[in-house]
Length: 167
Image (cartoon, rainbow, N blue to C red):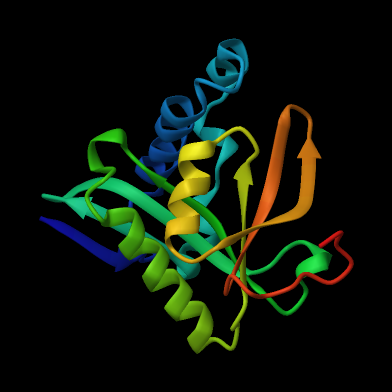
């Protein structure tokens, strides 16, 4: 049985950073160079900085997922909420945990006054894109790149238009 709850200041954020590292290596192996993924460490993440806007998923007291959210960081989406990350161990996928994390994060953003939500997906990650589309997000023409990371913006609600885009 899975449990989802908000992060607390006394949570083990080293374990959360390890979950990020593990899931990045599991998830992005098909699309990012193995040597690049191997150089990553838990120091790449600082989940303790945003604990107030983080949901954690557990199965039998074991951390299996994380979802961070907040105001959108990209200026094209000023006034929007953003799902900043959602990662699940492979063993927790396809069981409704991701859907529940996204639904709860989106509801929390709406309660905070963010009625439009953006998220960024690795351009090659078709399974994630299909997952977000199934949850009512829509792919946009807005893209960004940082080094070898190329991402596409997805928006919710699906009929929402993005200012200054090619849509």
